[in-house]
Amino acid sequence: MSHMKTTNRLGSFIGLAVGLSLTAVAIFLVFNRQYVYDVISYHQYEPTAAVTAIADRTTMTDTGKFYFYASHPRIDGAAAFNEECNRHEESSAILGCYSGFRIFVYDIADEQLDGIKEVTAAHEMLHAAYQRLSDSEKMTLNKLLQQEYAKHSDNKELVERMAFYDRNEPGQENNELHSILGTEFSDLDPRLEQHYAKYFNNRQTIVDLHAKYAGVFNELKSKSETLAAQLKQLGAAIETDSSSYNKSVTNLNTTIQSFNSRAAAGNFASQAAFDREKAQLMSRISQLDAQRKAIDNDLALYEKLRLEYNQTAAASNKLYESLDSNLAPTPSV
Image (cartoon, rainbow, N blue to C red; front, side, top):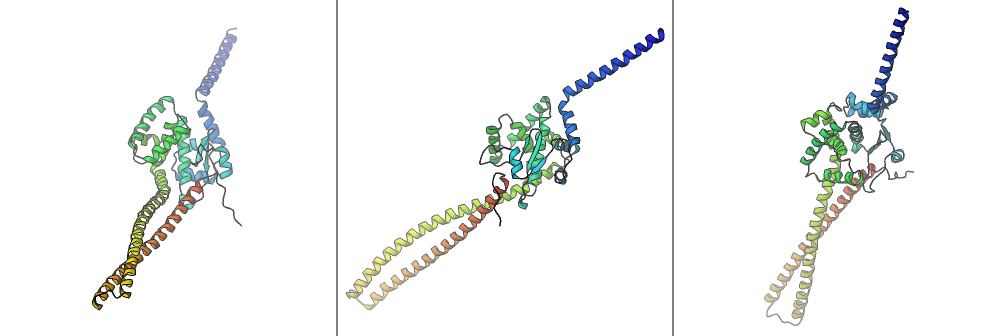
């Protein structure tokens, strides 16, 4: 009987231990549901060569790759991308989105925009990372993000972007700042740099990629603005000079008619007086010829600048169109 009691007691201990273990597992699953989901998603995903290249080029750490791959990233053409990522405003094309715990990146092929897919993917991965932070972690991080944002209050483009997010994704300012600052800005607060180091081995690599393709847009914009200013200034000068020239021509024609009438009527006191006045008229004609040539040269320059401006605008439009997944491709024969 004693042996049976001992055996039964041992069985009870084993049953209790199993019960406690199952309870512990259940509690772990309740409080770590997202992590368990991520682990399963991570192991279920087989990255393509293109996705792996993005992870490598952006220097993602194992943690960064974990969140990236757990989000099952896809690099899609326009049709598939538009099914997953909705545009909020007609004038604003989107390059990627983090939707339904998944990352989608628009497959932009323009070689001038090399690096844009990598930066977009890193941006979206940081959304996934931010979403998984605890409330206390977000609170600490948000203060740092806002302090950093305040340092760039004179950055008109950044302010306009944040206004866009405020209109279309209210309440997501810190989430967006987390992705924007982490992929586009150098020399952040050391505490932010330490935070981003969890996801990237060399964050500056991503910032450099962004600067590279952003520089293409900035160069075209700067050139376009310079040409527009030159055209405006030159156009105003041509208008002023042409008005002055036309008035001078009218005045000279009146003077020549008077000269010819007086000559025909023999109203000059001497041949010397006639020759002297005629020489003055010829001088004025010569001056007007030079003025006319100067205006013609300015007109030729204006036309050259106008063509260059149009070419620059066309190049800029082509680049922007390559970002727009809603534009149909140009037909080919």
